[in-house]
Image (cartoon, rainbow, N blue to C red):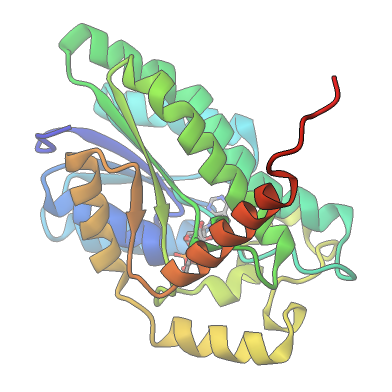
Length: 286
Ligand SMILES: NC(=O)c1ccc[n+]([C@@H]2O[C@H](COP(=O)([O-])OP(=O)(O)OC[C@H]3O[C@@H](n4cnc5c(N)ncnc54)[C@H](O)[C@@H]3O)[C@@H](O)[C@H]2O)c1
């Protein structure tokens, strides 16, 4: 998608961190933005702040782990802006924990926010983008926020499972949607300066008190301390937003924020390759 000016975007998790950075960078590029978030107060504050810069933005409160709320947010977007070209599936929570911390409510939460909202976002917004594309030849683009934790699994396998899912969905849909004029990118951030370590604030009411909390105490303490420090001193979310704008314009399959975990990806691929080496030369029995 080479011209972003005048296009319409829908961004989830837009009241804080990376989603807010993406919404702001899109608005700076001349895109009209519908910002969605479960945190109505922060959303109202950020919509007002961006509106004061003459950005054409609006907000809709939605818990994206509920399909009906995502559908209502899509309806509100169409009502406000008439069409939609860019979908940013960004909302996510640091939950899921490690073996020993799992319970069903925790899985419902982390899979609902991190993975099902992406599935439903594409299911609901895909046809709207296709319709706009066909009518006006305007095309579309989907960016879903995974993580480097969607390419390398370390200490939070619950979170990793959802983020690997987002990478798989994006990779799998890219050729299919290219044929319909819709680009697909997966954003895999490293450590970004956001409130992700405070994800407990976003536990939906229906799961309150049932979710094994996702905070640093669910992680091995050494890693938790390192991650908390790295996030506190992390990359500026607006810089990530600017990379996302570039990624949409250039139709990048993968949008990375830095090279910190590149060697981890190399190690994973080497381990996979070593698995193939174990059976090289054997003839399978059919
Ligand atoms: N911060 C990092 O270092 C980092 C690294 C890799 C990936 N990510 C991913 O980036 C995305 C954004 O996280 P962030 O770091 O900006 O955290 P953040 O906590 O600052 O922002 C997340 C936003 O999502 C919203 N949200 C949470 N649950 C929601 C729900 N059910 N419905 C609607 N909105 C909801 C929150 O209210 C918040 O405004 C997530 O998908 C996260 O997994 C973050």
